[in-house]
Length: 378
Image 1 (tube, helix red, strand yellow):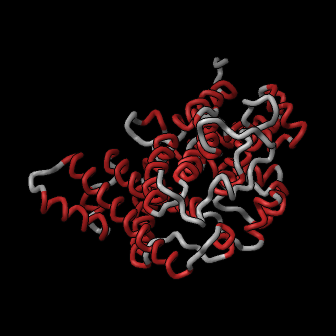
Image 2 (cartoon, rainbow, N blue to C red):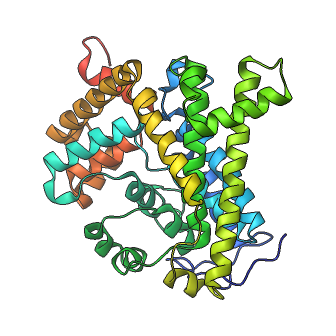
Image 3 (tube, helix red, strand yellow):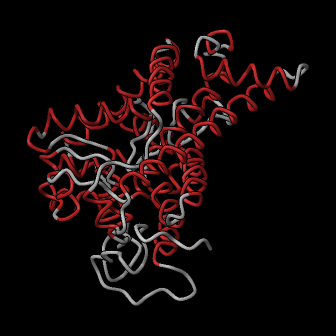
């Protein structure tokens, strides 16, 4: 294993776990965190949660599970190049979407609207907070504690974003948002590895679905540039191989840009400890030119893929399913499974209903909707 730099996260400078446990045998603390995530119920459910296309629309489109694995691969490559903690970045990457609703961002937006309507003081619904709530509270696997009892640094990385009004209730974990401190470099890597993965794999899925065309994407300079490189080297190449070769070169160029820019930032700031990383500026970054290109690609996908009429038809259905489920369950919490009825007594009906719906897969949400609303279903 590569020797870590002094400002990397390690078992020696970790803030540890909420509930003290004996050190793991034959593996590190962050390997233990990773293993707990991989064995969790929430992680298995990611296989049937939407990335862009609902799971039943095709077997080859990405899901939250395959996306999380791809983020972990990209993040580990970056961490290794920078001599940072690979086990921690893998752990954060695998856990970062555990709180996502069914039906992707459409489901999150609908559930947030329901929470604000029924529980205005709740702060709504946000998937980063729900991911943290899942690993801290909702997973039921261990005799001695609720949740997975992960290390502080893993939990810090899972909580990528947090509104200041939510931060106050999170203690030390939320204090960095109030005091405007940075997370570990490992957490910063996962944030941008997530962006690399979903932008470029959404390009791939968009082309596979036929909702995007090569001609449209040629208007995006990074795609056109990499496609031209491939065409110059492999003149007869076409179809899926051309697309895969182009997308992989786009991802590779971004990873190298991120590593190079981050190294330059570290050289300039010269942190010597994890505490200095927390107190300093954000160090993991793209170059300004690459950042601008990423913004243009994201805008292109938003306009041409996420707002495509065929995608909007499904997302509108998804919002209706989530809203109908929430309204029915909040209207009569006795319809909730017993464990969520117990949760309602502790945290209120609205939060318990949100927990239940957020934990659903796409197909389970559709099945529950039929059970509650379709005549003849049981």
